Image 1 (tube, rainbow over the protein chains, first blue to last red):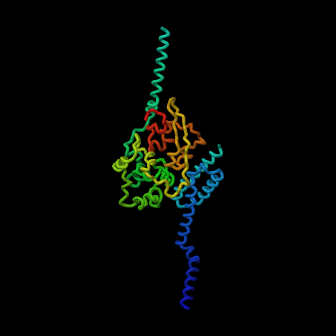
Image 2: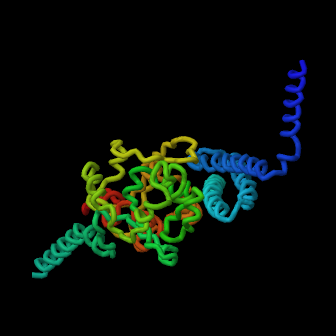
Image 3: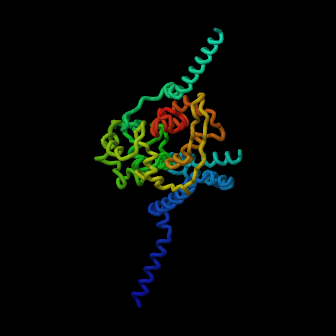
Length: 109
Length: 261
């Protein structure tokens, strides 16, 4: 009985410990958070730029939405370290320029 | 007498016109200052030297022919952000080590292909544009022939499945689009047949954003600036067709109606 109670207590303490600010402020936690964020913006980037080959088939509204998403993503990319920032801003502008180009073409037609 | 002289003048005029008509294609081909043919194994080879020599390293040899057997242009010139113009992309050892540019996953990451550490450095930092010639000959022998450039018909090689370059490493294109439309552009020279631009063979290699709007902003600037002289100066089609894709002394693929090769 005693063993069981202390087992539960240890488990509860571990659970509380993992939820506490000890890890939240540690470098380990910040790395994990950064990685998650990195994955988020990268997924968004891949999703946006994966649509370039289909740009001519998209409606004006869809193109406008993609251009807006590019603007939002640019803010995140601007916060990356210098090398990544340079590389991904250039790639993002290639995608956004294409969407704008196709949108302009559609509005002209 | 005046009657005979008249016939003579007319006949002479017709003969000269026919001669001019027949030879105009050849003249057009000879008129333009096409760059001299590079040896087939070296066509498209680059020596990149933005910072190499400044940092005590030999320039980097890059073989387009070798890489295009494995990846389409889209992968490097869009996904990995290599500009089309040499020495304008800020490739450094740091970016390569960080998994960008040449060091990207699925490329020279030490797994898919040799990485950025000894003893591999000299494989790229050789400073020798003729590197890989023997390997080239081995590859070229089993691929369809073409009269210019690498002397390989890359489009045909792709079509026949003799090469299967990867089209993306992380940014998956949403879907394959059927581009059936062909752009037909009248030539500036009389009697030179129009240039025909098919989208299909281009999108097999490239992403739309490789060309639009930076190189071809047709809706805004129209097609009136597509002149041979500008293309030969590396603008428009000349961005690729002067250095990597079949060179422009190969008239026929673009002007299919022309007599000259």
